[in-house]
View 1 (cartoon, helix red, strand yellow):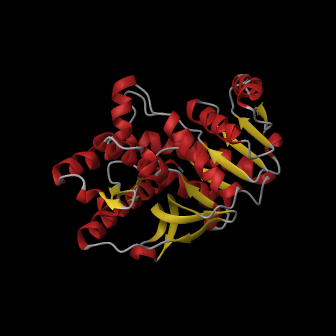
View 2 (cartoon, helix red, strand yellow; view 1 turned 30 degrees about the vertical axis):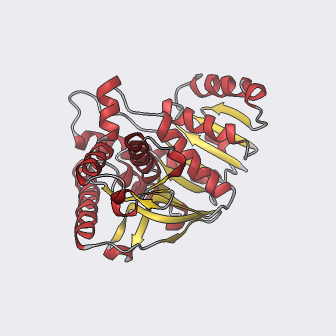
View 3 (cartoon, helix red, strand yellow; view 1 turned 120 degrees about the vertical axis):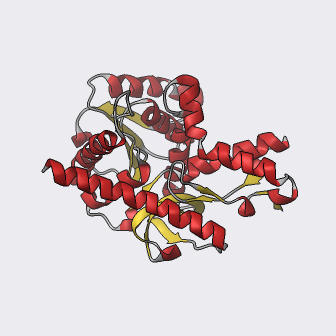
Length: 312
């Protein structure tokens, strides 16, 4: 199989490296507009192959012709928010980037599955979906896997247990409006509500919601190790057709009472992409939080449409 990663920055390069280390695809193409950047990073990763023991071929390029025939594409391209830049500025810039790279990619890979990592995640996934013309099950966003990993990390650290024994569920948009669900978090099957007092759980939920911001505050830029690993986990589920149940930004069309947007929900992920959206039981409070998160995502789409209408 062939995987393309668009964007050779920290996140994109980490996706490529994580996928390569799993040694599960024949070729990875790392593409970027900056000459030399994807070529250099790809060569560096290729030279690490004898050490890590993978046979995956990694190439770097500035030409989308090299991506032709890809089975999966991970889009990480986009601009970070800079000082003085408004949210509208970021929306417009990244929508233009995601639309452009999607158009260039799909010409040569009409049967691929697209995973979007670019921010604002839920809106950019919607842009890629509309631009590609692909069926909704072949376009998704990576957010829930990352956010849930943070949730599981903080639970494990608080309890002093292995992260491998912690399972959790998180839904909603990627950002402050996400909806962690402590009721569905367990340690080896034991609900965390039996292991931690409410105030500790509430603190973990809040830290999870602002997990990305915590890293930005510490080092002045966004995370890349965990986001890259999260996207690679989704790639693995698709390549191996493993039917993993993972939280992804998927297109909802009636599920949870929501329509025509991408939002974080648990899905069954396999060779065909999003093979099923799983509807778990939510109580009244959880449903209200999910609806509020969906409204936040919907507003982002409306804001983008307003900006683009004004510019045309």
